[in-house]
Amino acid sequence: MKSIVSNSMKALSITCLLICLAGCWNSKELTDFGFLMGVSLDQTDEGSIELNTQVYRPMETVGGAGTGGGKPPYVTIKTVSDSIFDAARELTLYLGRKAQWSHMRVILIGEQFAKEYDIGEILDYFYRDHEARLTMLVIIVKGKAADYWEQKPFIERSMSQQLLTIIEMGSATSGKTKSAKLLDIALQLNSKVKTVLIPYIEPTKEQPKTLYSSGAAIVHKGKMVDYLSSSEVQRILMLTNEYKGGIIEFPCMNEDSEKKKKKETLETLSIKTKVSPQFTENPPTIKMLTKIEALVGELRCSSIKDEKELKKLEDHIKKLKKEEIEVLIQRFQEKKVDVLGIGNNLYQQNPHLWEKWEKDWDDIFAETQFEINVEVSIQGTGIPVGEKVAGE
Image (cartoon, rainbow, N blue to C red; front, side, top):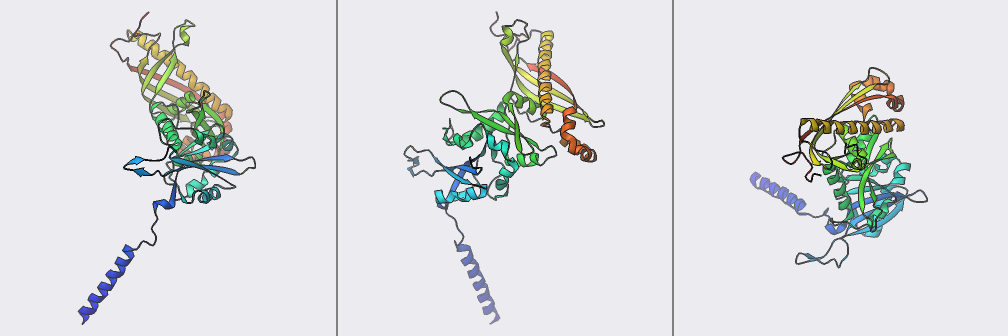
């Protein structure tokens, strides 16, 4: 009898479990969602937030081939509100689907919006939403961000993906732009110096206009305060050990005025900078040694036939790079913006001294003494002899 009751209870338990497992009470279909690829943020004339969202457009396929009728694989929806959260929730009123943020590529912020609003506050919604990924890129753009969705991508299927690849590949291969993900921005805006570089994109002046990464925006204490050209971004990445690879361009060292207009190049193998801060005095002294190892990329007016000529060329590049770095640091000091993160180094080494200097750090940084040194080592010329291929 007990065995029969026991078996009946087991059967009942298993039946209940099977009912729960087989149920579809909380299922969601793909047709319930609208997959967002990119958003842009601008300020309206009334002071509200204008959210323009690029949403993936599903395409009917027949036999594996798309039949979109020539339509692009995305649509752009505009909503306006006093908060990003409310503007995002209004998307469903136009789309008829719930916005899905997990496939987001980029967030575009209009330059004027970035100068007037605290970027940390602007991005707050994306940090809190459980679907948004902290790996999505943030880009500041010249002019109104919404206008960038009207551009057509060169290769990728959407402008969101095109902008993503411009920044990621540009950062990896040219060293003239910088990737800034949501997580990176949060960490740096919450650091002691509260400064971050965010990639900057603008349209070309030619017709038809195309988009390109022209440098980076300096964001200090939440707001955009300055702009760096692509060559200046390259120097900053060298000093902060974020340089992944690229080309160093320099003018000919020949005294002839016509030849000095020509440029020669090196292809970098590695660039490392050692920072040796001395915080014992106020203002402190910062010693920086940048070591460059490279190959000759092209020679238009120089030759490297022997060690003496090689050393002469290395010294020429060393002098130019040292001067460029000194000019850039002087500019940061005039702006009182610690882009190099020297204050973060001070906090890590001596928290008590940082606590004492923190309220005056911008002024202290402006008076800091920098001792810049550069070493250049050319590892090869690319051909058996280090001369111009076409001699005079």
